[in-house]
Length: 264
Image (cartoon, rainbow, N blue to C red; front, side, top):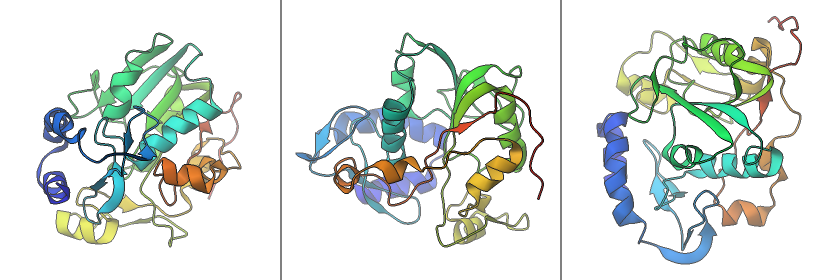
């Protein structure tokens, strides 16, 4: 099954992957039954999660039932423990909606849920994150995970997310990271899928982020918390929920009052 997952990821367009995943879940959720790991998103228990990855295969990554990955489980715990997301009335924009979240968020009575994406069949609005059709200060929260590495101009996309957030609103923005890099690496001359996979880790990525990712967001105008949520989890929790080895899990916020943006 691991080889089948990798083959599908590297050959099928994302919109087809999403449609195929519904059939996959009907079969896969009955594999690996056990109690070594728990998915906090759907509450299922397994001996271990399935492997997943485009180039490098990660063991114990994919929940067979809801298809959550390490980052989804981390975000879910963050929402549970650090926010009032499940109790407070709010307007949420979900860019490139992820299945483990989308089907649950739509059922939440306290959330006015809006999705946006260029291609996804799950999207309410077909639009580019670099130019969204929403009014300024429209949303209490924006979730946009593993999207910014795909766009031509990530600075423009970050600015758009900040624009549509209400003052005091929060954005959850996760990206693939190369922890050996202090700064983000991008090169507009690299355009072929093969070369992008070699340089940026995946055939459709346009950059690989370094540890400066929060600084880049701060330069756009976001407030960046001091503590990475992943660091607050115990070693036992990280193992039980199969957390990522490293992730910059912050709730980036829009200042309540305008301020001059930082300059390079």
